[in-house]
Length: 106
Image (cartoon, rainbow, N blue to C red; front, side, top):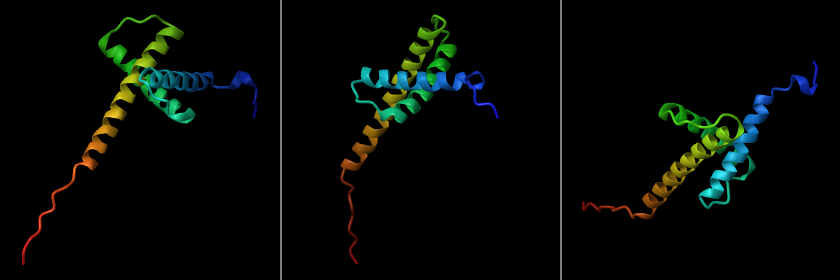
C-alpha cells in the first residue's frame, strides 16, 4: 500500500477544510461561539451541501471557484444554524410551560 500524498483524496481534505471554515464563519456571523472544531466541520459540511443545493434550485449566479463555494457553504451553514437554534428554542419553551395535571376524585 502506497501512502504518498499523490494518492491522497484531496476532495475529502477540501470538504473538511471548507466545512470547518464555513461552519466557523457562519457561527460567528450569527453571534455564537461556534460548535467546536468537529461541530463546525459537521455544520459546515451539511450547510455546504444545503447551500449548494439551494443555489442550484434557485438558479443564483455565483462566481466559480473558492469564493463562490465559500459563499454558498456559509449561506447554507447560516440557514442550518438558524434552524438548529429555532429547534433548541422551541424545545426550551415547551419545557418551561408547566403542564396542567388534573386530579380525579374517587
